[in-house]
Figure 1 (cartoon, rainbow, N blue to C red):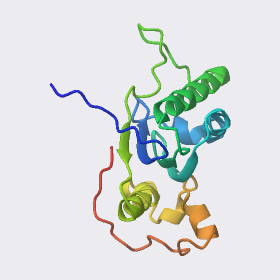
Figure 2: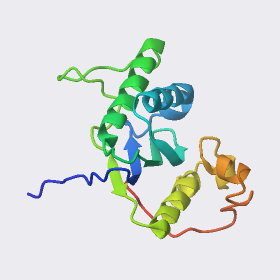
Figure 3: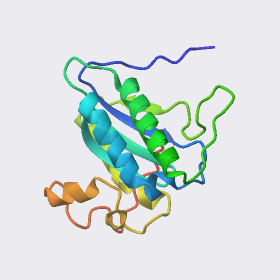
Figure 4: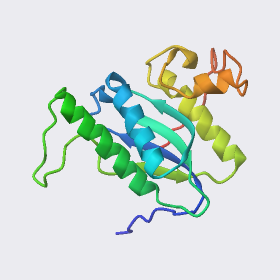
Length: 176
């Protein structure tokens, strides 16, 4: 059996898919304020730049760039998941139970990670992130999904206002 080893590139740019255990849950969008707070709190402790992000009901995709001499994205994910879970438990909605090891059964233990190799790879993953709500049938057009960095890309004139409308992107499955 081959043991998977994550690529730890200091100052690297990475694409991630992070998923809840219950693929029918909607905790991430129903409690988007808690997720945003968890990410901001983590960024204050361990800075990173969010290049692109989309949050769907039960999973999220994001691209981060880490500081120059830092490769510790796993610690950042641990903090985000921990802050979000603790905040959600304090709301008492929904009731989240602990497993036999004393861990909350909210997040999948593992996550998908990909090191961005070049500009083309980065642009493909950004497109994938912004088109993901359409791919999952949540909206007809990418701009209609509120939890996406597409809105800031349009605001900064990086992408046109009708980006992704009436376009069929190739099926790409980055970590789903």
